[in-house]
Image (cartoon, rainbow, N blue to C red):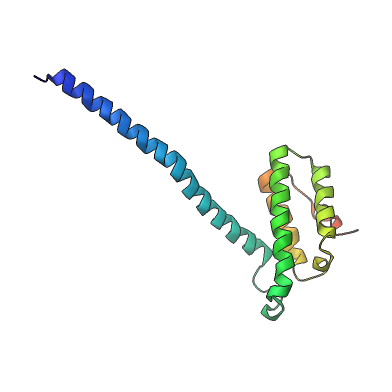
Length: 143
């Protein structure tokens, strides 16, 4: 014969097991779902900073000119993200960005320079907590 105490004990035990499974699933799967959404939002944010409407004309934005810009943007994001994780100081980050910009000399003076400068300012502040002034940002493009 089953008593109410035994019934409630088993019911509570099954509920604990159920919620443990649910929490485990959402911690593993939910985190990956949230990361995917965050990456899509970051990509949109980067594109909005980098390619503002009205800058340049669409005819000059073909695959040949866009590939180096996308490579530069990817490397900048990786560099600043790593700098944020390592706690890099402002001077070291600035010199690292200068070295990276020297790898892409054709972006200097192009229609993408302002967008890349804005991107550097936004990601450095959001991922590292480092604020660059306008003079410091323009000095990064000087050799």
